[in-house]
Length: 337
Ligand code: MRU
Image (tube, rainbow, N blue to C red):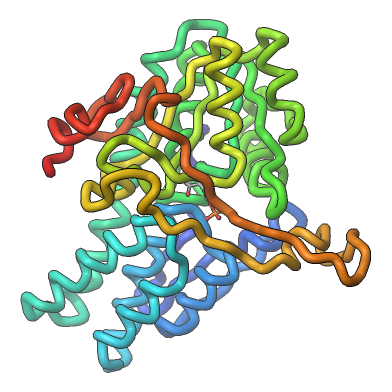
């Protein structure tokens, strides 16, 4: 695998005394960096989606704890503030629980720094391993459809679903990638296309509403997505619109793959019904690129994740292995109870 070509973007960068984040609100027009020197700034960056994607917000939050420790801030309120930044992606809580365990064991700022670095490094290793595992499921000359952004921008590097796509392209299994726009925030249009074009991967953007038509055409054999939380029965929360892709995929005989590190698996949550779905401001739907497109006085409903039931998923790929047709028993066998 040519990582020099396919793994060049690092959106979350620890600088020794502050955290640099590539501002994902401005891409692809502008590559501007934000320097965070406090846990409060990291929390705000997560809330505002300057940094987004389940693994990336967990990693950023871990660095937020390090900043709090370095500044002698009380750590319990800092942990609580970071934890409340967004509700759905369990990687955030997972990373903070890991940092808290180190704090409870008496870790100083230097030890916390090592823990945050370990969280970041392990994520990259997991992504590269998942890339190989996931690509191995794909037949040569396939077309694939992805949703949202699951690439280097959403992780420590390489990506989850986009890592599988990178590995699949590099090994000649994937010939054509389609990316859904991902309204309203346009992670697919703005971020995934930016990553794919940078890597020279053959990619076409589609309107989210073109997905069923695309599947019917026979151009895609797999839908490949990431996850924000995978419940104990395999139900998977991911970006709004994922569920309808899974329904359409099953209808058209297209396979559906979820790719996520084990830090996204939440065995304490029995099923998708128990996953909190983030509702964001209606303003995100009522405007495009900061310009109001809907009549004044209109309201909107803006859930930003949905849950795909396990029985619509053909494979869950984690760094621990692949679960085909996920069930609670298979999940327990891989992740414990
Ligand atoms: O609201 P976002 O942009 O943070 O949502 C991101 C997603 O839904 C991704 O698909 C998910 O976090 C997996 S990223 C590897």
